[in-house]
Amino acid sequence: MFYSDVLIAGAGAAGLTAAIFAAQSGSAPGSGFGTQTGKICDEDSGSHPEITLLERTNQPGRKILMSGGTRCNVLPVEATKDDFITESSPNRLRNVFKSWSVEGCHEWFSSEIGLDMACEKASNKWFPKSNSAKEVRDLLVKRARKLGVTIRTSSSVTDISRTGEYWKITTASGETHIAPKVILATGGMSIPRTGTDGTGHSIMQQLGHSLHEPYPALTPLKGPHPGREPLPGVSLDVDIVPEDRQSSTFGSRRSGFLFTHDGYSGPAVLDVSHVAVKALADDPSGYKAALRVNWADKGADWWREQLQGSLTTSGLLAKYLPRRLADNLLEEAGLQKLKTAQLTKKQRNLMISMLTEYRLVPTGHAGFSKAEVTGGGVPIDEINPATMESRILPGIYLCGEILDVFGRIGGFNFYWAWVSGRLAGRYAVTS
Image 1 (cartoon, rainbow, N blue to C red):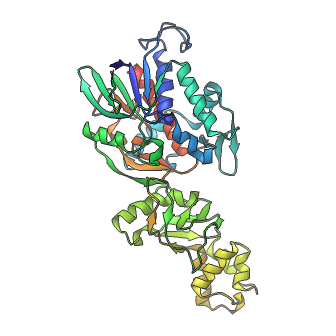
Image 2 (cartoon, rainbow, N blue to C red):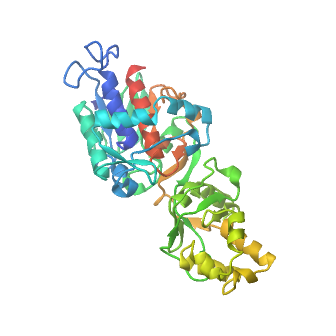
C-alpha cells in the first residue's frame, strides 16, 4: 500500500499543473509541510508533501504531444467567458477564470516553467518558439519531478472509496494507494488512444455526483458537399453559424473551413460542431443540425453591387472563392454560364442567398476518436469554484476535461486545464 498526501489521477495538462502547484503550495509557510518563512520554499529545502501522479498510459502528457499539430497552442492571447461552453452556471465558470488571467498564466510558463513562446498573430495563439509540443510536455514533467512529485505510469485508476480519514485508490495492476486528498484529472472521452475513456466520469457517478451526458465536441462533421463533384481538400475562410443561433454561445464566426472526403472540418466547423452533434442525437435526419455558411464573408449588399458588372457568374465567383467550389455552387443553383447582367431579380436573390447563407446539413460526425475535447461531464455546479473541491465528496478535487467545460479551438482548452489544475493543486494541500 502506498501513502500520499495528495494523489492525482491523470498526468495530462491539468494533472501536471495540479501536481506542480500542490508541491509548491505544500512547501509554503503555514501549509503544514514547509519549514521556511517568506516566499515559497525552494525545492531543495524544508519538508514537502508526498505528491503522487498516476498516469494510465506509458507516458505523461500524451494529449499535449498531439495538440496544435504537434506544435501545442499553449494559450490564447485573450479569453472571455463567451469562448467557453458549460451546461452549468456561467457565473461559477467565471469565478474559476477570475483566479488566474491569461497574462498570469503566460508569465508562469515563461518564468517558472522556462518555456519561450511566440505569438502567432494570424491565429491569436501562443506557441512555443520551438514549435514543439514535446518541449511543453517535457518542461512540465521536469518541473513536477524537480519539486519531488512521483509520477507512476501504466497506473490506471479503477476505483476510489472512502476508508476512514483517507481515500483508497485502486489501480488496474492491483496497487492500492491511500491519500487524504485526491485530485481527479482523468480527462473526458476524446481521443481514447491518449488514455481518456470516461473512467473518471463513471467513478464520480458511483460516488454520488451527477453527470451531464458526455458528447464529442470540436469534432469533424460528415455530410454532402455542394454540387455533384466532391470537394476534398478545398479550403477557405468562411463565416459559419448554427441555423439555431440560440444553441451556441460561441456565436461562432471563425475562419478556416476544410472539405474532407466525407464532410467538413477546420476551426470554423469544429467550433460549432457541438451544436450539430447534440442536434443529431435528437434528430438523426440532420434537420436541426443545419449550419449557415457565408462562403466569402461578404454581405448581401456587397454581392449585390458586384452583380451589377458584366462578368459571367463563374468569372465573378472565381475571384473570391476556390474555382471548384464556385462551379459546384453555381451548378447546384442552376446559375452557371450566365452573365451577371442577365440575371433576373429572383436569380440574383438566389445567388446572394447561396453565397451568404448557404444551408449546410450535417448527417453525422467523427465521434470521440477525432474530437478535440468532450462536451458534458461532472457539473461545475457540484464543485466549489474557489478551490475545485467537490461539494459532495470533501477531499476530492476535480480539474480539466472531466468537468462540463470546454472552449473553442485555439488554446482555450489548455487555458482551462492550467487554471483549474492550479486551483485544485493549491487547495488540495492548503485547505
